[in-house]
Amino acid sequence: MSTPAHTHHTLHADDTRHARPVVELTGVTKEYPGGVQALRGVDLTVLDGELLGIVGPSGSGKSTLLHIVGTLDRPSAGRVAIAGHDVAALSDRALSALRSRHVGFVFQSFHLVPGISARANVAEGLLYSGLSRAERGRRAAAALERVGLGDRMEHRPHELSGGQKQRVAIARAVAGEPDLLLADEPTGALDSASGRSVMELLHELNREGATIAVITHDQEIAASLPRSVRIRDGEIVSDARHPRPGPHPGALPRNHGEPS
Ligand SMILES: Nc1ncnc2c1ncn2[C@@H]1O[C@H](COP(=O)(O)OP(=O)(O)OP(=O)(O)O)[C@@H](O)[C@H]1O
Ligand SMILES: [Mg+2]
Image (cartoon, rainbow, N blue to C red):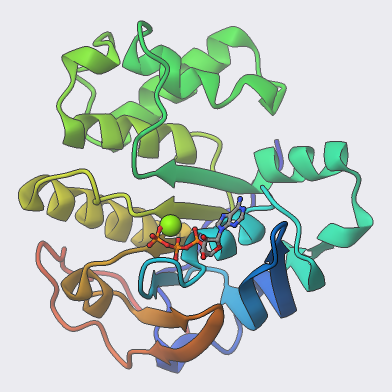
């Protein structure tokens, strides 16, 4: 698998100039059968290394946007490019190959396979990676270590807490080192302490180089992210990069030098 080396860190307003775009949406609309205009002309660029929140009221089009960004769905009109590939030019088969190579998903309700271990769940996410079974198992174990679940590898989903299940889902999403991690309300089903620790994990993965977009209803979470995109009635109504990270709950110290 050709995964670019992650040599950069969280981007803020003053160091976005040299990063390459991972996502480029231009004039994207989405009309569902029945006539709902879920997106009405969305322009959105996400740069390599960003961590952004997508916020907005229920029904405003957040999940629709995330599905289109993640190539789970195609737009009705407009252009979508992921890691430089124009989605419209790709067959469904090529699109799912692109998705498995570049995108990881985390859903509010975990979407784990019941009855198999945490490790098997994470390894499942690597099924189409072309890696051997043994290598998938090794990477799954490493991803679980990375999210702090090294001591829960053989637990099945019903033997894990909600926060631990969400960590397994995050491990599954990042095991293949995707260019882009998309999370739809990853803290929605969790109590506030588990939610905070899941957000801490996302911040940590971002500091290690992952590009992350996270949908949240939680204003406090949104305010803790380096960029927030507000959507209302299918339109982006504001898009702000915050100059410097305010200290957020559970922030780890930034102990690296800034890229010049
Ligand atoms: N498969 C579908 N078919 C028809 N209409 C849909 C479909 N999915 C979503 N919609 C409609 O599109 C609009 C946007 O839905 P979406 O799920 O993107 O909202 P959301 O911002 O994620 O809301 P929430 O915060 O409640 O999850 C809504 O009005 C919804 O009813
Ligand atoms: Mg939604």
